[in-house]
Image 1: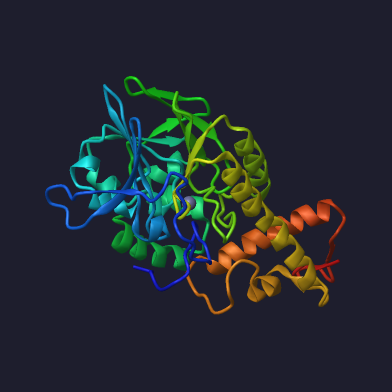
Image 2: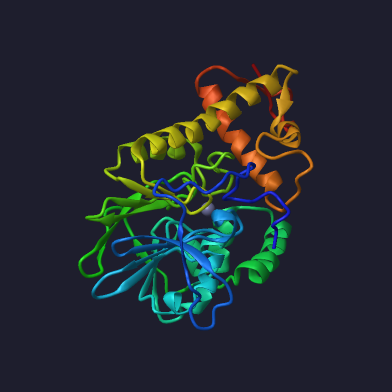
Length: 337
Ligand SMILES: [Zn+2]
């Protein structure tokens, strides 16, 4: 467990209390075989089981939707392993996206169908696909594999079924609809629960850290567009994978989303300020850290810093706010304001 460390792809740097506008989450008695209470939130056919520390990475919040015909779970964070029969009776697991902390209960769902957006599905189907999804160096990936097998019960799902934007699942009296909101990963999607107006928004998680777009399959420009689209979604309840949990107030959601989006602009400003010190390469900028504190060390940090910085530089060059300098053939490009 990495509880003492800063988090990874679904991260935040600040501890904040769980916010549910409908009051503190209810608590259910443990089921047979369970060893602890798991706080929950209920609305109609929907139950949210909150992970440790309000679903802070490495845990997450588990959504369960019970229709008259079948039961769906959205993602399977670590807490999925602590809700006993509730998880084991799921007929279908619909993933908002592929990342290790959203797959931690799939090892228990051998008989359930696993549905993943078509842009992420290869990452669910094989380790090789997951490697391309992350994009890290081979040594980093090897270290990551050992970690996610130990901490997230990682298994690949060769049987994963691809879904696309607009796909619906009728569970009997309640319907789930996929809304493709890429950026965090290429296939990241919100899952709308209809007609209840509840949106599970995955890792557009409204944390203090801000948006994560540091993997090979991530996209800063797509993330910007997805935030704008999310603001227009016809929902009255929003559920995040991590940390915020459940928001039932429109104004609170709008405020949280705009604060979250502002983190992108704050990073851009910080990067420009770093360039005030003179022309620098991506590696030099990455060593100074745009996302994580300089003393934070994890296998993906170097890659995520470079990938995020490169995307910001691309935008800034397109806007003619940053210039690339190529001193000599073969030498690393330096960037300047
Ligand atoms: Zn994620």
